[in-house]
Length: 245
Ligand SMILES: [Mn+2]
Image (tube, rainbow, N blue to C red; front, side):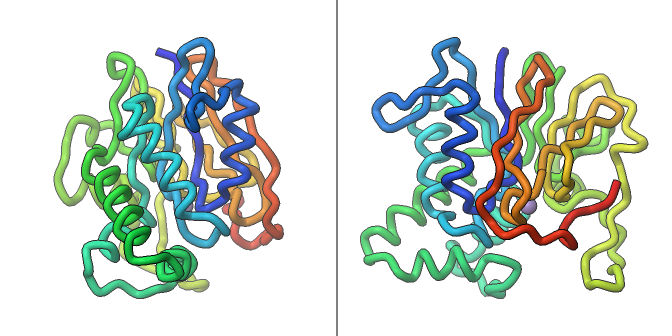
């Protein structure tokens, strides 16, 4: 199987459009299609902070649900947006306020449409995808080898938030252990969640969150070629958002 996996988009619709074009996809009936039958994958965090979160949802819904021709796993931002759309009390912070503002500006009918599209997408998608005869795993924040094939709350927390200790850093962000340093599995793990200036390959894992929404780049990994393709971001660069590795 040949798949192009895209990192955290966070509402950067123009960037994802140009990345998909750069990957060789052509628009057919309003949906990108690859002449060689390649498919798209998404590591999650489609929305929040960027300028056009709802457009990103519409695009990914078309690809994954309507065309059944792409793979998506939810990120922690997707999980929170799902809870917001369900009517749960969630705080409109950490970028959700931008997605909520786009949503609130819609007509009642448009609201219903986007809300049901997103909820359908989320409900139809696994916490992580195991693909290509278990040679490839897509998980938002990555996954420990012994969690592959398992489900449940510990696994859910790990794939959405990473290997968090429960503690907080001086800047208020959660302390995360670097699970990829200790990963020894045979499956290639493709993930995002932690913005890095350069996509990072380590022990058969790839972090492809190159911080599009923080002004760096939006990146895709071509599988099985293991080639990185990226486009520059139009957002202002915020250096303190990038983890030093
Ligand atoms: Mn993210």
